[in-house]
Image 1: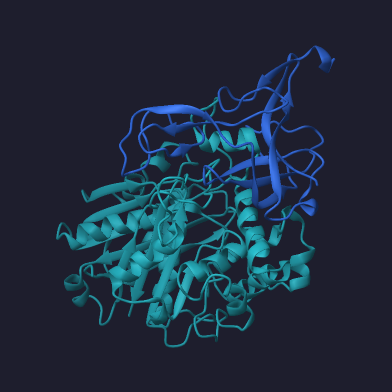
Image 2 (image 1 turned 180 degrees about the vertical axis):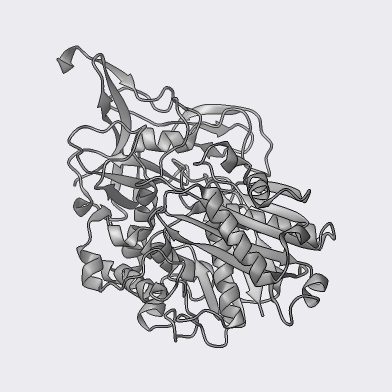
Length: 396
Length: 146
């Protein structure tokens, strides 16, 4: 088991399509996190920024960009990129600094301003060595194409239905209704979901996460530092930032093919399962201990995959878990009480940090209008392009 | 004027261009036998191997449909979309000998309604886009209709 660090404070800038400089969202979130922690900016010894690749150079050096905007203090800095896992990478860097005794208190920030529509390759020119450029060029394989392949696979092998997928959107719409940081606070019926435009069969517009602006921040500290500032802080018991094991036999965005399993047998545990189970092992808990989860619902169907990946049920049983209300607020293990990406849309470097903010509020009992009663252990899970695992286990 | 246009691969070296029996071009590690597509040419990616000699091989031109979906909206650049955009399906196909899944667009005229996991699929070449001089072709998967 790894050592624990304390989540001293959390803060967010509401998700939306505000069209402002991403730095503004990050600073707002950071200031809220400082207030929540009850400490001053100048006390922060280390700052970790989750990078964004869609906002020019300041986005590539996000740690320093936020440090400058909050006022130079001489604190040490790191800037990390891991696609959708960027926020978890930043959290892991800060946590490692604390656990190594190199600092007592750190600030982690991620924020993004996104363009409208499909995510597309960044930068110009023909990049025939870059699979992310090539998948658009040769296949027109947008992100929803990969989500559609996973969704259809559930239908083909488990008998999932379009109505099951729509139910995920209905559930998350209910969950996010009272979340002040959610972009879409609206309930939908299954019929409304199923009447929305088809994007990548079987997934419709209301079932695929939008791209959003937003910012999230957490103040992390050593347990010693926390005892002087908080009576009983929520703790981070694990951060899993693992890579796949060869051969990875699930087709992953942005690839053209899986690894070949012709000479080496696939690992017993597929990559997405191993992300969560590596976190459980670090934290000394199992899926049976989890009271609440925030999973990366880039699509409705993908949320169902995650139920199985994080061990809430066996492969093929996720639809049953959804239908019987287990993952709805009031059920045994609510999933995405925040409303998830359904209600937020994705602000890439902020998203994994936002998941940690939500679980912190949940474990403190402060998630007004969406509280999971008596939650003690929570897990966030996510995956960044090219094989960046991202999972965090929190405890109170 | 398409008759006078030259047929060009949309990307060099990824597939053979004989339109009757096209094949994807992969590589195979001479030491451990692992296949790679697109071609891995310098180092074997099997972490237990370390091989540095990879030979070019033609991949199986048939496989079983693993999953499928489609595009109802035109993808952004660098995809070159016809105007108006015509929806098309995308398939993930399992190759038995290589034990790998390879993506491809589905050949024209085959939408998701005609697809089912497990279907036999074969590799074909079709036009991806055209300009004034050339017709750029790419590999696609076509269901084998019994």
